[in-house]
Amino acid sequence: MDWFLLQTKSREELRAAENLLRQGVESFCPMICVEKISRGKRVEVTEVLFPGYLFVQLGESSVSATSIRSTRGVSHFVSSSGRPIKVPSDLIDQLQRRVALEENQVASRLPKAGERMNIMDGPFRGLDAVFYQPDGNNRALVLVTMLNQEVKASISFANLSRVNDSSL
Picture 1 (tube, one colour):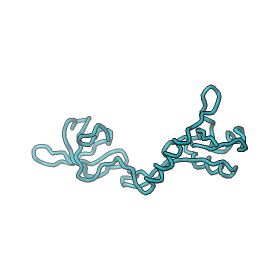
Picture 2 (tube, rainbow, N blue to C red):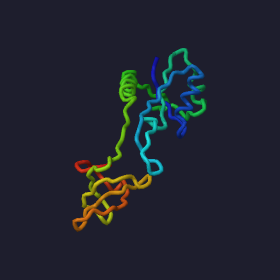
Picture 3 (cartoon, rainbow, N blue to C red):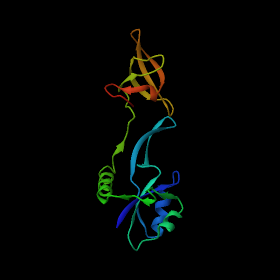
Picture 4 (tube, rainbow, N blue to C red):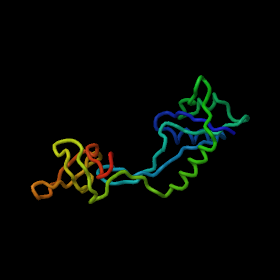
């Protein structure tokens, strides 16, 4: 049995996997738990690791490629020179082990309260700051020391980086 890579319609990876399962086709859609900011609060959400893609296992007696391509949620096989690309089984095994190991872990790139930050752009560029709390989905409240006083400033996450880190 060989593994192949399917491209799915936008945000329809799980729908495609469910419909393929109904046809007896095994699929694998790696998922991870991530911490994000939604409506100004930290939330944990489960997301697809490779958005827009799904791995399927096919054998000689499996459902036809035409049937798979016409499955709801599926766009097409990822191919080269008109032939679907085979994905090495050991790569799928590694992904499955990695997903199983990190099943209860939350991936987060969000800073914690009190974490030291560098301001990369804007009027406070070059100053150090301390992360205070999220300010909406795309901004952060930070404490900037100016004239020996800490001042709160709302700065875009894109303009912040952790001290000793190149990106947030």
